Image (tube, rainbow, N blue to C red; front, side, top):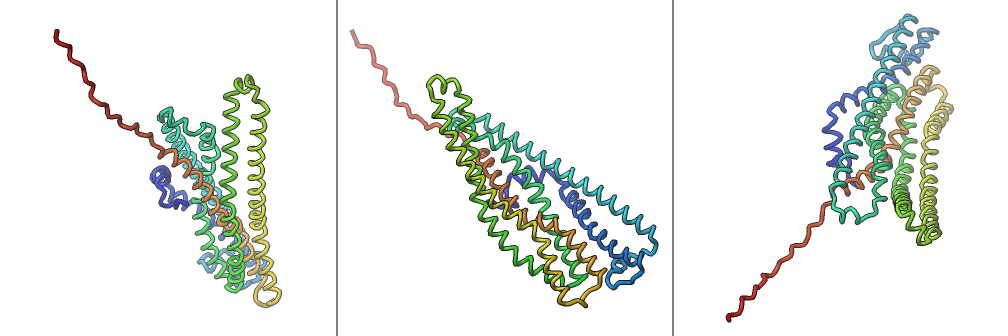
Length: 349
């Protein structure tokens, strides 16, 4: 499969056309990182409100921030929430706008290219098979840009930062959680590889069915006049059955994958609580609260990072299909060498 980093179409229409991608990415990352600050502030709330002096929940002081007034605490907490909202809104709006413009440019290029084809080249493939390039494939490409590439990179950096925060809070707990996550990660790699042929079959069968429907509607009068209605319906049912089988196989695999992602965070917390139970003196309530809050903040990012490779794979499959049409060239007509025509001379009288 083509590497998205080296893909010429993405370089031309995505990276070069969007010079502010780094700024948008930085805004999204800062918005995500502010979640850690909110989690640490919840831990410090125990110190301010209950004055327990819990070790390592004097968390903000580790970063040079000391808040002793409860009113100031709530003011800063609210300010962080507002900043997080503003940055998150800017990131979501900007990246979605950029993705929509990219898809719009790609769609325009594809349509212009196909309209300039010769009739012979255009008729090589039933035009119904081109329809998915303008609908489902463009949606997959857009999803790849936003949720696969952009947020996949952002959430990967967010996870690494969160890992350092967790190591700072409690190295033993962090290594336990990390070890369990590494044990589960190969399962998702296996499911992603298993899904690739299922995705291809699902798309090919759907494309074939749409082509039959388009072709049948275009020849509706001829089908009725030639009494081919039942034959056409049988062809439709066969192709529909293929689509249903492909969709069911894909949905079964995707349901298993999504269910595993759903239980990932509870499973990690379960093993963490087991560790704490068998070593009860290894933590304080405030330390456990801060650790759980940070770990919970990482859960959505873990899901996105696990989904990102599959999302990119789907998008690249769609992009490759579009690129095949963009690279399709007119066939050159064979040169015909004409023999010289001999004109007979008039006979002499």
